[in-house]
Length: 608
Image (tube, rainbow, N blue to C red):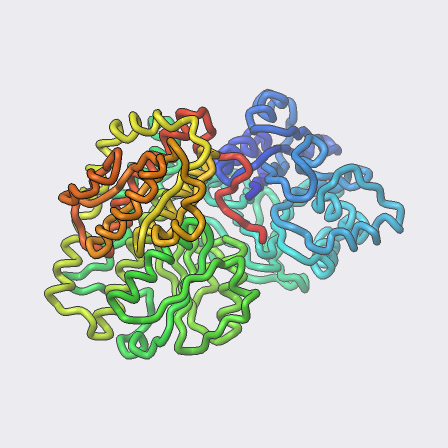
């Protein structure tokens, strides 16, 4: 959500800001703006719409000369998308300018206070309060003014700030919203995510909560909220720069679907030693694993669907009870956990606000927390007791594909490791499962290479109003992700249901021509699923089935069948989700949707 870039150095700032913001478009936004200090004044241009509008208004930055600046792409929270509500925001005399990611929860209280002191507001945003609040406390010392507002603001924020009185300084602040800084050739840069800086530096500092950075062209100083200097160490980013580019594909989403075999290999291969699973970063002995009495998996969106799949895998293999919680609800149900509970939090970005808040709640209640994240050095990675990385590389499209597949692979490994430590799986069974796991990348690639058939089928449903996904057991978890992929990028109403629940209300929505996607990969449930498929088909539904090769019985109850290769029953999600990703992608493309940046959505959800 939102994107921040700032630069101070010996190069023109505006082109760098625009370039950095272009690398953050995947985060989701509805307006953009930049502010540049030059010759005693701060110039600003901002506009509603895509970044290309801002680039055209500034002639790719040429109309805003200067070597100090901040830029922003806004995802609307307070105030509708508009030129006025777009960031950056000034104080009254345009001597302080601010960009902000996050939400100031007590902004109304602060606004009333400022209005009593004569401050006037021109936007509907909570961010404008920050600019005026800085003005209120500023007495010539930027650091002092910043710490004062930090003591008074509630909520989350990452800030980039310029003071006209200090034209050789750029300030950055962070609380519960991601922010990184790095030294470039001839200057320093700030950003809300790694892709924005990869072109300029590989060594970055991850700003912790309630930390402040003061930068000049040549220096970088860090302070805590008490204005005390602190020391920090940089982290080397090993991502390939080209990984954040389309590489000839029409969309990032399609490119990332084709990167799934590699993401799966890179996630599991370093952790398989012969017929043993070695997860050193787990930091748990076999005895400690045996002491675990319950696992709670906490996540949002697609990551929560990984959790639902993992519940079946952990309970089936390791015989440990598993609860799956939506992160946004976890803190509000007074959860029961203790030192024998392992909490697993899953997040691609490692910055998901609800998941991060749930992590902190779990730790306060005495549970051990394991983070499954894709971004090295992210907040969840740093705050978890242990972290297991999914080596998917940068994922740019808002709708996750390869990060989802990498998360599945990581959770398979964990479940198998736990089963082994608890004596629930024989050496022979483990060897067979590892062979099936090693076969997954080639099987995924094979399904991807048959995408033309799915594209042709998808073209028949471009005008669909409602599409339902059904499945039982683990197949229901697959259905939830397939449904989410479709709705988030095509804007077609879609829902996933446990197939056995159809008769309890949902079947009343099925009418002539309704498409129902049925997932049946679990042999023990084939007969029941076929009965459910017949139920909707007799009411006029057109049934698309995703099933395992050899299950020809599905053809009797389905109008169109997509076959996936046979694999271990617990790994079925890794294969069955691929045709559903492709189906969603081609429907969205056919409807002319912005596949990589769907409306109203953001890649990194950093507000609650």
